[in-house]
Image 1 (cartoon, rainbow, N blue to C red):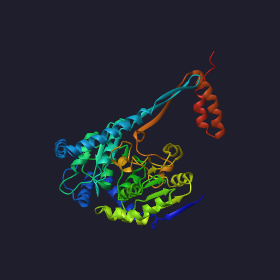
Image 2: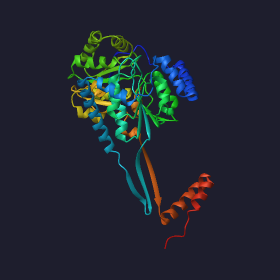
Image 3: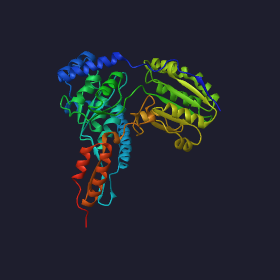
Image 4: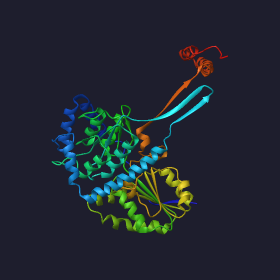
Length: 425
């Protein structure tokens, strides 16, 4: 048994950038102090935006009317799939009530957060799908107020297609804001927003750092790093398909690693030989991003057995994990660490990124070892309650007081003693 690296990454993930951290800290402090005035300054300085921050109802309608009908249909198709999957997730979130001991009743409730802030990237790419994934899921979870922000284009504002997606999904307020200023505006409840209980959605390193710094004051979906993808393939897989699946994910950015783990050495060598030709077919700036990601970050691992391949995949704990191999049920049962799993050659991560339904906001940088992606659960608080009768209270009080005094917590013991009642007849 052996695990052999046929291609290894040339560059390791960058260390934490103190310049980004310092810049974000200053921006958040300025916005905390000066509020909307500081946000407007940053919007003009960083995005060239001097127009209104809040998108009015009339502006929403006009933007929606400009979206071509075919694109509307495509967005509606994706929205329906995402909504159906989120509704199925919500159906698994039960409330319960149990008599723990005679007279002691305890239960669980599911309560949505009061407000959510959804960040939709809009720099190099217009991330229509991110609006669908974040806002729809919050809406299905039952969040009463949803604010959505996205970077503006000079003289235009948020692209029409993103406004349409935000509107379709049920955003209560749309703000012409990107970057740290957009995150801070949602957290503080500026420009008519309700202060966000949770901030969700992917973004660049500045957005990720702003969410990290605000965590605690507000909730966040996760600490996000560059997107990553891993393909497991055996001798049944097609070289061209595997290569394209890797290259398509590499176009996310130069710092986005892609990995191939395979039990077929001929497939591995074929993918390595084919990748650059496929990259060369991409337009700029995608070509440059994919070229660097492939040559600096990509790895190809040859394994003797499928169990070894599964062990390697679990160690990487990728954001996206695709299996193009025989006996898909074995892989579904065996694999344990991934953000989202794509089984079989008929599916691809691109489907999950855009239209198929399961959320594309997923754990990166190995975080899939301990957490999953965005879901209705992230917008919902699982809380507990309890009540008891006199008999149960008497027994609980005695045992609680004894344990508390053993721990040295006399106040706890006295609070329990106060509940002691005569034994019921």
